[in-house]
Amino acid sequence: MTSDGGARIRKAIDTVQDSLYVAFSIEKLIVSSSASGPFLQRIATLTERISYMAYKDPVFQLPADNTLTEIEIVNAVMLRSLVAGTNRHLTRLYVENCLLDRIPPTLSNMIELEELLIMQCALTALRLDVLVNNPKLTTIDLTRNRIRQLFPITTPPKNKLSVTFLSLAANQLERLDMSMFAFMPDLERFDVRGNRIVRFEATAPVTYGSLIRLLVSSNNITQFDTRNLTLSELRSIYLDDNALTELPTHWGKLPKLIYLGFDRNNLKRIDMSFFAKFATLNSVIISENIVETIRTSTPITMPELDIILFESNQIVSVNFTGCNFPKMNLISLSNNRLTTIPPLFQRFPESRLAMDGNPIKCSSMTALKSKITDYRLYVTTGTTQSDCPTTSSIALDQERLACCDA
Image (tube, rainbow, N blue to C red; front, side, top):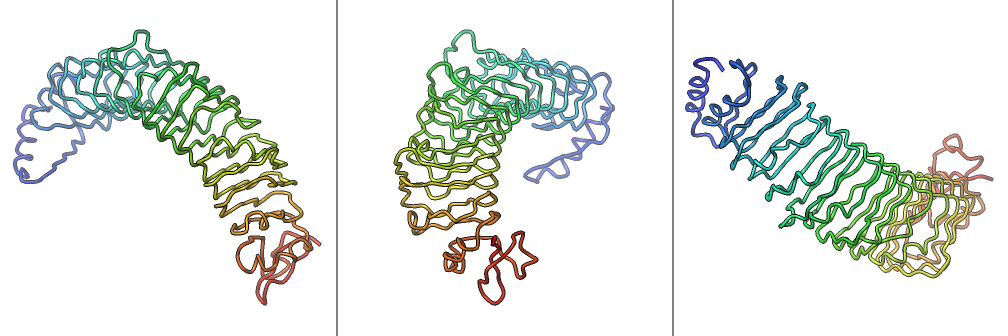
């Protein structure tokens, strides 16, 4: 900062002092040695928050007793070290695009810190011990680093951690043991999307009574075992974009689960009896797999289930005999290989059925023409035969044809 830089900023602030919120952008900052350290002491007399849109030094120093409450450091492509003195003011630290390879060892000096975000940097491991001395820390976001290993807390802390949000998304984890986070009982959202996780489990019993979002899609999961987990508030689990070949068999307590999804895995056969353990489910979504058959090995009643989506699979056979779904509203079997329309309206008289994108025989479709015109049965339609991907069609009205195979 030039010799009169502080005075010029102060004068600018004074001219708009009646405003509720004032933000200044400095295009080029000239400092004698570093844009942190002593500079932060000077700038803290003028503001509570500072954002660096580019930071070029290898070290960032936060002096003891600095009064800034929020610091953002973006595009810190040379930053390798962040050192903090004892601080009772900073509540939010955001660092993005840097060379930090570990959580700053002086993290515990930032006593009032509530939000720690280190994104797109060079972290390769997370030692949970480093988090235990920040009693007010609620948000930890370590998205887009290179984290391959998690090291558990070695000595149980006197007090549980206050963390409610933890993101390890877009890292390089291959195995996840949920029991590691037992000292975060208030966890509400946990995000590990976009890693390389093959095995998801909890090796010891643990309860997360506040967890409402568990995000595990876009991994390589082949084993998903939650038998040691109690997730009393969790509403949804989406295991989309993983590598499951069978529906997981080991489940913990999920008394409020509503949505369960397995899009884009490698599932080949579905037994509807599997879902009996989830009495509160209202949606089952298993699209873009390689499912060929759907059956029901034992009778099942699901009082809340109203949506089933099995779209874009390779289904040739469907049997819902034994299924009692009194609230069923929509079953979608779009884009499969079915040649006849399954007799689902008898079993679920109030439901709608989507069959578009299947090579349905015209004889099967003709018998249910009224369901199509009543918009209870959705099939591929066109205005002329050339619109149809099939060999034939039936007339629905003067303008529409239902596409089918002769």
